[in-house]
Length: 282
Image 1 (tube, rainbow, N blue to C red):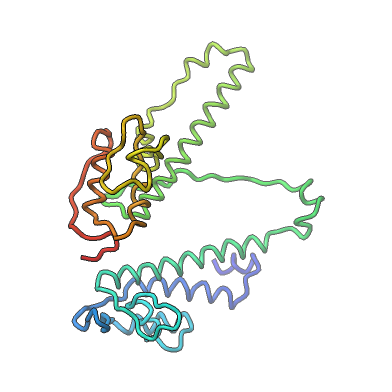
Image 2: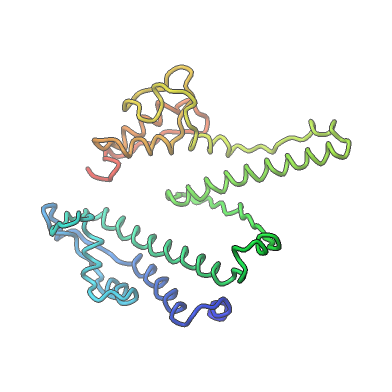
């Protein structure tokens, strides 16, 4: 792999940085906390295995590991503030995971940009480049994973894959219809049947938007049911609406909204959750 990095023009320092950030992401995922020291008035949770945090700090070039700990176990501070509100134990793990995901995301985006810069031709941006350049587009739509329990990120990945799959199937069938008509086989077009895509019902459940104003639209009063003639709203849009409301809505209120909106939807079934706010607080 390092040979391939060098073929793409990566320097030894850049290659080392890739390995260091990758290792840091792995070590961050092993950091553990305990809340015997937690006090909501100012004392944060404690890192149990500080050796892991020391390693992360060393890999990322952070001189003081405790500075990193402070950022992870406390809420974000406002400019000029000298005190920080501590996070609860579960929130510390969420903060840790967010930090790891941010590191990975930044590394991935940097790698893509760095490789694109390397392979760009010298005449990029000129009229000659626009006239003579050719491109090959690759679309990978078969990355669906079906676990016993999907996390939110995996559900979003599956959602996008299904949307792309729908687009791909539609394009293929439209192309086939066009080809048949050009060959004088227009009578065969009616015989083409789309495959059974039950997943489209799930996609609609997730991202459907109301086509009319009324009781079910975004910004509607909490608990309001969809008015007659108003199409249902997808779960993503409901979550987005509820997550921005003040005061923070509870998970139970969100689930009730799901039930009110989609209890007659074939691919929807309700669940029961503890009565907590959408921020995870009691």
